[in-house]
Image (cartoon, rainbow, N blue to C red):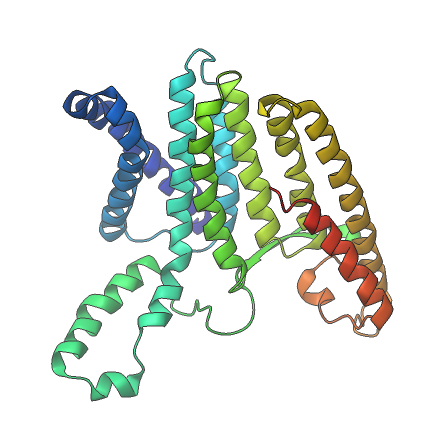
Length: 337
């Protein structure tokens, strides 16, 4: 039920807020400052409205459960792409605005991941709180602590120690030990926040150079975010590879359809280089999985793609070097993204 609340209730709240902003606020803004100025202020106005509405709704109804929030982050842009499929093709301006607002809503959702980080960074120790004055104790106990408690419902959730947080684990392909497993650590947390911030910014900047196939462009950007976020939160090597390859398709389309003068040449070149790197990485992943299956660390001798379990594998020095450069090559090819 908590996962269902995270996936459905909160996106529904943001959709309603977006529709309210579009219907009520947008015409008023156009009338007050003119169409050109309204277009410039539009994204900021939408984002500010969403943040304000979500903060207010959070205090009134409580924060969404952190259970399933990573799946919600992945499902959100995919759901947006599905909705855009049914928008009228002639409604290009509406599609632009919808895609932008939808991605910014995903950024707002990702900010809930910062709740425990901010709480842990600002929370005083018990000794410091006891030594502080009565005003500080009163402020922290009755104002600050309840405030961060609203945005972080799980009191045990903390990024201050090693390990993965918000882990979701479900069996996917049992025969090969493949799981749908997601999780965050202190590094991937910031990469997720950065992705949800830069993707809508990149989309908003790109609209000036996109005049044809607006629906396809918006869908490509939304699915690109799914692939990037999935690569950062996947804790199963097979699942990671799926998300990694998912990024290739929208990037190929974006370069080949909406690129510059030599876009076809650039797209084909990008596809070939990326496929070479991806195939090498796939070989490296299969090598690691097969080695771990017969390793002493794997007492059950079962095949698994679980990154947490495989991390205990002891690999000889030279295979380590080869594996490192194989992964580094695959990553380096996609650096221009």
